[in-house]
Length: 433
Image (cartoon, rainbow, N blue to C red; front, side, top):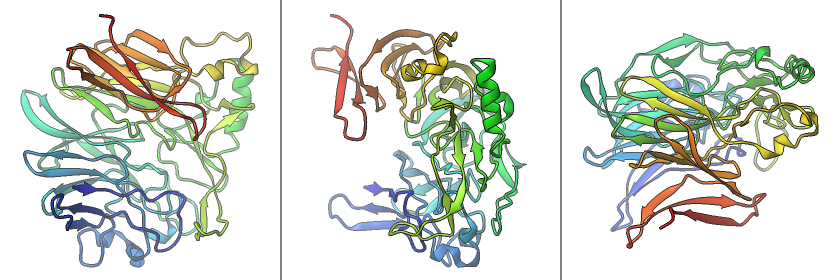
């Protein structure tokens, strides 16, 4: 039994809890091994933590689900961000194994290979989803691969056994931080294939644009902040980062169709504000600076600063490393009721942000909720909405399907009422007999 960790982002202090991954014998209860996601003295990767920062840095969890290759006895860990998520002065260096996919021997906990997807992370771009263990055919060659989806909207594809990228990954220059003492990394990895499945970076052209007046107002608001390409670092005036802190992809991950080699992914397309400020000491915070204020980037009493769509569904052909299709997914009924949009011609769908995932069935259907007030059945070949069922509750989970003893297939999805205290309800659907 292999267990990850989930130390909350709100905890920011020296010597905060580490994100070690541990394994126990399910029959005896004895611990079999422990893997340090922050390598300690003498361990591989320790030199990527400068000035002894490995001794005081925590988090670097594996909070997302991880996956296993049972036949080979391998487990794949999607590792998250170290503390402090947006301010890394106390942890100079690349910071392995933070924001890395790590392959371990499941029986011993020994590292087989790793790939760091974000160096010295400053954006809360932790790896959010379970790696997909897949078999694909690339240029006539069968490859047992593992796919790591990211909040940034990148799709990283590796040979499952060796960790070699299936398509080249390039280290490209990114903007540097001007925060005193912050040694942001000069480059970040960019996959050459597949293309990103989420919009990246923010410019004035991305401003909310459903009326000329609102576009000018949104652009004026954008000018108050630092904007730029993906990986523009957090700042004291506030940096608009897109994708935001929920992605891109998130814990819903991807649904793989082994018959076609296509991976289906629900993504969010909203911006977040990364503004640094002097930390207010408390029982949970002892740091120089942390991210402060609301994370959502909005204006005019709740309108998103960037234009729609705010959620999409993508089909990624992993045999070719290409996007098969991408469509706007879901809607935001409350946004349609905003007074500033009264009488305005609105898009058919706004798209909806949300971390929830999708499933794909042998019958050729992608079932999805994705965080909105409806449940959807989508044609896996085209992305066309085949059927939508309106709900009075928000979909909060990834769907699941099963066949009962009578041979009838059911699809079930979790929904929730408003607020954290809202009652959770499973909604079940089936074809008429």
